[in-house]
Image 1 (cartoon, rainbow, N blue to C red):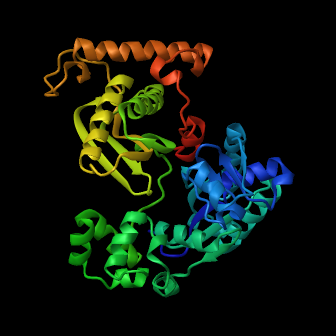
Image 2: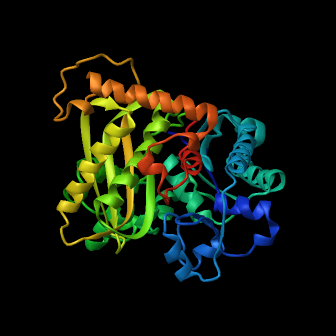
Amino acid sequence: MAETAAILHADLDAFYASVEQLLDPSLRGKPIAVGGGVVLAASYEAKAFGVRGGMPGRMARELCPQLQFVGGHYKEYQRLGDQSIEVIRDFTPLIERISIDEAFADVSGSIHLFGKPSSMGEIIRRRVRDEVGLPISIGVARTKHLAKIGSQVAKPDGMVVVEPDTELEFLHDLPVGLMWGVGPVTKQRLAEMGIHTIGELAETPGRSLQRLLGRAVGGKLGALAWNRDPREIETHHRAKSVSAQSAMGRKPATEDVIGPTLRHLADRVATRMRAKNRAGRTVTVRVRFTDLRAVTRSITLPAAISATVILAEVAKDLVYTALADHPQEDEISLLAIAVSHLEDDAVLQLELPFELDHEERRPGTHKGAARWVLDRSVDQVRDKFGRESVGYGSVELGERRSIPDEFRELAERPV
């Protein structure tokens, strides 16, 4: 952990929407959203009406009738995101890129060359604006957690420097929702305990937090509330999970909706894993109901999988488990699949003694291996003739409203 405020967190503002406004100046100053059936990203003008990423397009239009939807220019996102990060690289090689539009940088070793970290931050912001054409916000602090919060406070298009002697004064008045790892569910749980600010969280006994959130999460948030964050910049990073989701508006929770949607999502996720020679052991599904409440279910398998049909079947079991726990819910608005605990996809060994109920789901059996071989054949055809050239009939014949792979891969892009 740096002893001075020399960690930068740079975050391009409303990145995807800003790129679209850069490419088409007629969109500047207007509420726009990237996507269609689901909002992939929204401009600040749209966010002012409550439009948010992941929101169904129908709901977004109700909130903002003048909202304009635009298609995504994924190659431009890649190019402009890379170009922005290269500006930071002119100041330090110690960069941890955590997505296509944000990165941490340790500039402590560059102070003797370029001056104060705050000066470097201002130069980076100016150069990204002038050379790339995009707004970027920067937080400067002693820790990664505080630098990231600083960049959020600085938005849009600003910079916040948190000096070591002002850390807790700055941190404790802020809403707890700005903390890394506090999502809507955790935020609601904390609010039920009367915890709304980071300072209130800091003053909450550790045992109370652990009882409410679990030992790991409660302990982590308690430490971060006092800016105890020993994490250093990691210049090499691999994705820890692969996921895809499909927003479907308002659909009945029936097999003819759930089955094809999960097969479509499993196809997306498994294809991406196989392309990187990866497989995963933990499968998680997310089911969102029409009132926007969501539940998740997960299972950790004894063997890592990357076969499309196996993943779809495991995910289907999890979804129906979630629905069985909520029998009053007969409609859903979103389904998602994520695979984590990734590992390198080793050569299959036949007949491994794994205790799964279905032989065809065991990657080491002849049936399980056959599914994997079939998927590899499909991958080869798609690589040569394009993704739409071949696929599962039940998936390809129906129109799905999932987040495009190109967008999700950019949003989660490890380097």
